[in-house]
Image (cartoon, rainbow over all chains, first blue to last red; front, side, top):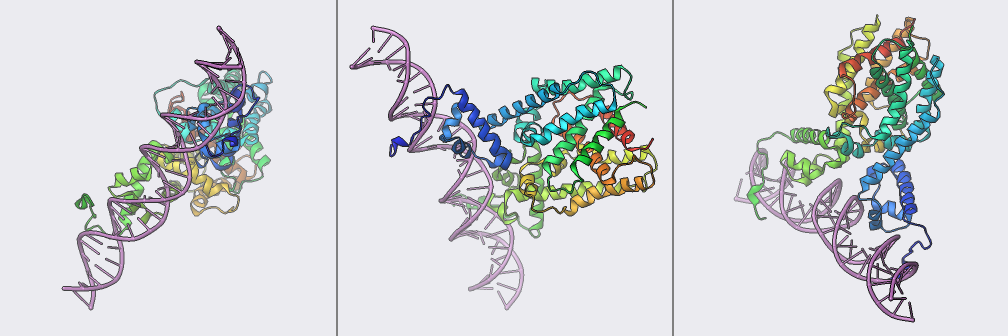
Length: 211
Length: 211
DNA sequence: TCCGTGACCGATCAATGATAAGTGATCAGT
DNA sequence: ACTGATCACTTATCATTGATCGGTCACGGA
């Protein structure tokens, strides 16, 4: 009413798909810097250059923005792991190399990793309820890559003799622990990062490898 | 005004210290079930049986309630670890026993562990800023127990030859990874829990122990 | 009896996530 | 050229949130 010309209808833009991407990009940036719950929908809208209700034309809920980012982070991680797959693991070094991809992903995209594995609300609403015990496709592929390699490794008799699923979950948990703590507690007096990572990988390889 | 007698001044209660405890207990329960950000101050107040503004007579901020619980969780974990200290570690089984205390604590008090290591907002406000690089006394003691044991173990030449601090952080990260994932993702198709834990501990012990 | 202190409450604030209703540009069909 | 539908977007508004304000009530010492 008062300033009808203040509108900026984003002329000549394609469909709504690009707007969606703009929103996701802005949200990811803000979530990363300030945390999911410290960012308001109005801040996101302002960063994109639109009004706050417009967000709801693209996402039914604020949490859905987080969830979408969550899914994408998973997919990107799985993709990184798959891309780094060098075929069958034949040596401890080979195993360490694969695990390092996981670490590198987390440290290179802390915002992604945070949203994928360390975000609170999204997790509680998505996972806390014991109703759906199925894995999302993204989780499947991420976890699947690791499981396949380790199961194969064990089938060839190169690992310690424990259940391959248990081994996979154990290794995954260890890697996740390292990455999440490094991301979550930058103020902690960690030893030099490369030293920490390499010794962690060595620890894993020693634990997994037979003999 | 309308129902002045509806007040319940909690007669004959001691000082305010007990009220504080009631608030903390109620908040812990609610935070655990619904998550830090899904719980409102009014819900906490109602659970305690007081009005919402009264909370602010005991805590300056909602986040301060979370922070207090956070500190207590840390303290309790450190206490558990210290209580389980059986003196010098002389065998891999001995090491595994100590690490199991950590796991047991997390799984026995998931609400505590969640608040101590997996809470988001409190962490961001408390740790994200790189200003204070000092460790809180609680963290000191928790981390310290593990570090002391492993450093001692290495001094006696029983571990692999890596920096003892790196080893400690690596082991801690691995344990944290397992506990936090078990807590955060109950819907994940984990292998039988005891199997997972014991194989995880074996993995650790194998990785740490020399030879 | 009076007064002060401390625990507590209702009313209210600004900000939040979300909804409703409306505005104006664009485009197909006549 | 006119019309009507549609789309992207807006302002106005809602209930709820964390937090503040001033006041009220009971009780204990003078």
